[in-house]
Image (cartoon, rainbow, N blue to C red; front, side, top):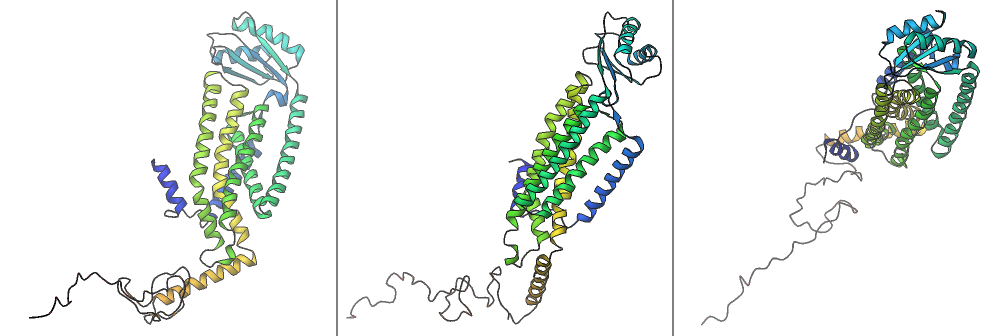
Length: 386
């Protein structure tokens, strides 16, 4: 069995535990810091919107030996030097030239100049108006709002409103980090990016619901015991699903990384690359939030309720009493159902007479007599003495 599999079994049995919930203030601080950096980057740099949102044209050339720097100069001259130009080398050896702010009539003129300046026979042109990108943005925003509302309603019905609120915070956290990375690094935002952002919401929610389902089962009937607080059981549930969350994330990131390599490294920029980039950043953020944000946040909300506060007091009182009982040499006190050590120090191998026990029930049954051994006739008269 692999080390990760062995660790998973030990985590599930409770032999090993990492205190995620107990250190939740640290995770909250880290998440707030990352979120603030993302928001500042978004406010200062803004998003590098593609031509689908700002309007412009994309020109694609056949295979050419011209470098991107030389093509950048040629494209800028062809566009009149008044437009933003982005040149990328494709895996086929051709060039992808993006020029913003030009319309259909201007695109035909730029197309001819590019063919002459780059020394190629023909150049393909695709013109996109800003209205199309605006329509896509509005529909994506509407879909995001509907998705968030449905998520909150479903989780409130299936679990409880505290879990619904925690999942919503985790989703907003994932979106903010992903968008912030785009703003800080300067990645271009395209319709493929929007598709990737909407896709990571489903994954992040799935990973969070898996943890919440285990938490719901673990804390069922929690007020009927006095061994663990809610935060302790929440941390135990999180540890039991930790390896599953890691495996799910790794399995999801590997094909996305392959798409990112193929889309960006071999085929060049395009829809495939845009989707994979958003997915890669979002999946990593979703795995982080499901472990370090969602469940600790639920524990913080639940520990504020009167029931969980009362449970915490009972657990603390029992533990304090247990510590006092261990230091009491008289051995008096009540034995709880979880304490199975005999108080009188009786040896299980020695017979104990009935009625000598102090109580009845599990762990208090005593054997009345030792089993008779086979003496083999020793001590019996062998016959009359002559």
